[in-house]
Length: 159
Image (cartoon, one colour):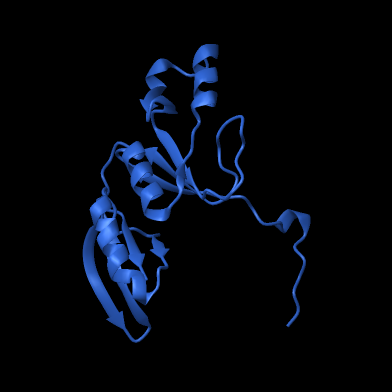
């Protein structure tokens, strides 16, 4: 088996997973607690944009005692780098963006949380206490997991 070195045009890309939400800040709090991530602090950037008139006051809110974007907020892995000037993560991130329409169908993409069989029951109980809902237990030849939904009904699995 040979491995190919990616050409500069095919170098790995930086990415984030964007999730539509009715209440992005509540979703950020849920997923930060669920994953052990931190909610990004963009307050310095939002404050600067407000002072410069580049961001209308209606596009900002106070969240956990600091400025935040009204319609966008992200969570990031606590060990990943971030831009200190903007608070924006440079690694593993989930970005929640406000949308006007409700979720209407099954997700085409979902997260799998890998906790192991020995921790699954306790983790499901912890996630339920945070606001997740149990959908069903799955036992198949390929494995066993629990399907849950977050507070806005987005499916995810606990394996």
